[in-house]
Image (cartoon, rainbow, N blue to C red):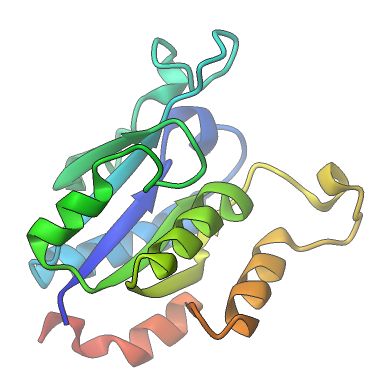
Length: 180
């Protein structure tokens, strides 16, 4: 089964928002796995229309994070939470013969989750690597003080039985053959 890795919104305006060093380390290791196996690594770059946004196309924050950007085989630009909505991602994946997508990146509860669901709706097998995602938000953002956003999204996707949800350690165990 042909696999591809999506690295969603790993951009300066998000990565520099708070300490995401652990998530970035895991994302980079997964990228290296995919590169070694010669599976495509597709970065997804979000642009906001609002001029004041750090992700506006003219803003420094919209640029891909320099420590990882050179790993990208392809870059898909988007303006909505889903990497599929009004983009060429679907046609790229079709041309590459991809059947399974691995989801990493930011923001867990928006772009990562929406992309995972959209991928499933399009017939892809989807693997969401929970601790290879991160968010700028906290439980208070949603008026749920103790909410662990990443765990909540992972649980919802897992319970759906539509999306495979793993942490990095489980990914290593299940897909140790990815380089084979």
